[in-house]
Amino acid sequence: MNSTWKSLLWKEWREQRWRLVALTVLLALPAIWFFSSIAVPAIMPFNLWDNLTILSAFANCYIVLAAFFLGMHIAGSENARCTTRFMQAVPTSMWRPGLAKLFVGCLVAVLPLVIFYTVICTILPLLIDNNTLDAAIERLIKEFGTIVDIYGWSLYNLAIGTFGVTSLLLWMSAAGVNRSDEVRAGAIGFLVCGSVWMVFGFLAVWVENHNSLLGNGWLYLIPALPGGPAIALGMSAYRNNQLITPLLTIIGITSHGTILYWYLKRFGRIAVPPKRARASELNFFRWTHKHTEPMRSQWRAIAWKQFRETGPLAAMAVFFVLLIVPIVYYFNSQYPSHSDFGEMLGGASLWAGFFVILVAGIGAYLEDLSPRVNNFWRSRPVNINLWFVVKYVVGLTVLALAFGSLLTPAYWLEIHPAADRIYWFIMAAFFATYSLALLYTISMASYCLLRQPIYAAVLTFGLLFGGIVLVRWLFYDTSQSILFFTTLFVALVSAITIAYLAVKHDWGWKEGR
Image: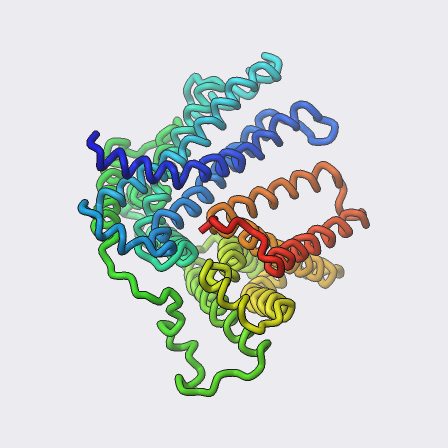
């Protein structure tokens, strides 16, 4: 390895080593929950097979989140820090720093999985008696049709996680490459990956219902999709698998090799405009003439600015949900009722809403707390209290109206007609609104403190997961507990207070960006 590669890899490792620590801590939370359920079965009911399944589900969530967060960094970090022009001036091909970023990113994403499954398969045999462990192994043998043990289960899940996170990370990086900042790169990457899967789902339903001659041929497209190699590996492991594994491998390597070539060819080769805020590109949001007199009211100017930042992202998410869900529902004969349509619409809205609200919460102060802009507006006669309140309320209102327009009809259709239909609808609306506000507030507070989108996203997810586990332990029956609702209220108020104090007193990691 020559000195150029050493320098590039050293640079990327120095930049991403703390992301490795953050992702390891994030993946340690479900491991702590798992071993706590063994140590304290009276508080957390324990069933080895069920808990192993839940543990795998958490690991799969990690795959999506790690690829999303690291893809944001790989695709948009150079432009966000205004170092692209310097990188272009270095006497080396642009594909080298692009490949170094991607390689170190994959390493940072995979190492926590290695640590996670190593700890599980090492400690679990020491805590569980042989009879319980053998019963779980018999379930594994019935499912996979081969002789496996806890070590084989760990190795199998590690392989799935490695293929999945590498594939998703490549797709995210290629889709968001050369964007002006990490948040835009993450939003575009998420929309591209989601759209690809939506189109594939539509194609699969159409083939199943209208063209039975193709049989299961459409399954061979799965290795080419974002995260598809992990799913293809999972299908190949089952005893009833009838697919040709070498063909799946060839399709996966060819498709991802093409995406890698596309990413390396474009990385760092597009000129960066000096102004990162490009809201004028969305012409349908230019409702005023360019020579209109500036707004005289501070709160109106702040509200308009925040609306232009949050509105396009929320509108794009609503548009894609309303475009894809009716199409899939229409061509899928398995969803003939209104309640099933409401369930599909609600699930798609919650899935898209989680990432959009997370990005919107982090992006609320992404530009305003950047070093130069932060110093500028703090030197102006701006009422900080008014500035924070208006930005928070407008951003939250835009998101609530956007996803409320989706979740309201979804919940109303999903809840079956009954005497207490209004009650359950109100409860669902309350918890949906509260979850939206809490996620938006925590992500905003995390960014105000850390000043780095990736760490803020990891901290947000860690706090949410830790809070869910804590509430699950403290309040086993949440339906009749006044203390439970009091805890929810205190959590939201605490997040708002931390975000407000961080903005007012300029707390935060000043070198985060």
